Image (cartoon, rainbow, N blue to C red; front, side, top):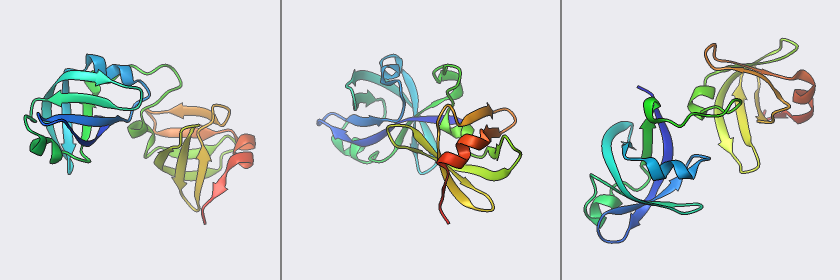
Length: 171
């Protein structure tokens, strides 16, 4: 089963087991309807019930069923709040989950094979894709650069002309 990370537990909040979560999603309002989730700790996923959600612009406060004390919440520091695919938000056309992009083969529209997308950095202005192939490189995830993204075939095609303008070689 695929799990999508939607938040990072940063620390306890209060003395009754509430947690402070840094959102990892563009849509923080999605937390308002969240009732079932998973806590990912060291690659293991524990189902939890979510209650008492307070959505702020850059932080979420919530209670989860496994935390009744501050000490229990402290043990979850740097763990992730996740949802399964069934409970993921529906993305608009042209938007993708990072988990679906990582591992895609990347080429240019002129046929040059660049390698695999290995990591996506979120920078605020736009994401940056790190690609490893014959060379290591990074490109911004610009709409004008992304000629085609085919998740089912794990293939991303970049516009050759735009690629030449924006590529940053790491080696």
